[in-house]
Image 1 (tube, one colour):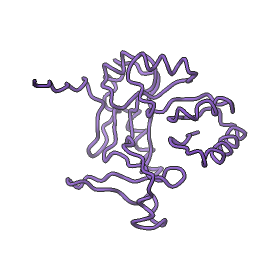
Image 2 (spheres, one colour; image 1 turned 135 degrees about the vertical axis):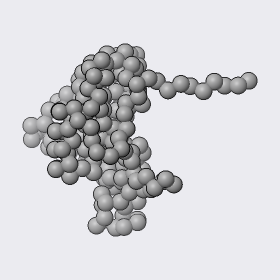
Image 3 (cartoon, one colour; image 1 turned 90 degrees about the vertical axis):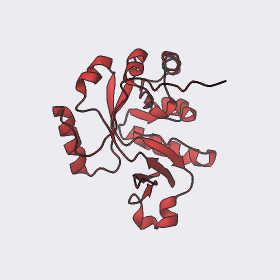
Image 4 (spheres, helix red, strand yellow; image 1 turned 180 degrees about the vertical axis):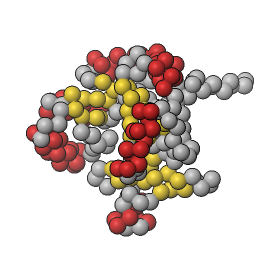
Amino acid sequence: MYAPPIVHDHEREGVLAKLHRAYEAGIRYALCGNAGMMAALREIGFAVVGDFRLNVTNRESAAAWQEAGLYSCILSPELALPQLRDIGWGSTITYGRIPLMLTERCFMKENGGCDRCGKIALRDRRMAQFPLLREYPHRNLICNSLPTYMGDKQAALTGIAPVGEHFIFTTETPGEATRVLQAYRSGRPLAGQVRRIAAAPALKEKKHE
């Protein structure tokens, strides 16, 4: 169960109704990146898994969210392998196009109509395509042009011992998702360009006085 990352006051009642129906249908875990929805999710009865949007980047923030009642969490995708290892709690994103931005406007409706929902992408000056996805209720999610993939880097993942490995499927067809999972399980690389979890933290530029 995925709780919307943004819920305005006028949307809350409708969202809560959907969450109650999901729980009544037997769903017991909820992925949540919205701190304002956590108490409601726990009150309904869900075990709450923190989304990467909570920006857990160190042991202190991980401990704070644990104390707040999170069942588990997905660590920030901005972290390098040693940083993920040092936190010692949480899952890491090992496959998928990581969401970059959430917009209030629906660019798909404005630039192609609802018939093109999920079929539009933004292009940068290098012609890289950033898929647009629909987010509740009619917001747009802009995803990275390349998926992260660590299936052929299992030794590096073993070294950090994540609690779990998180997959984000967005634009993939069922067949493509199956092929990703098969490649991941067998440790094979994927065709085409992919992003990697950094092997070391990025160096900060020194300020010149």
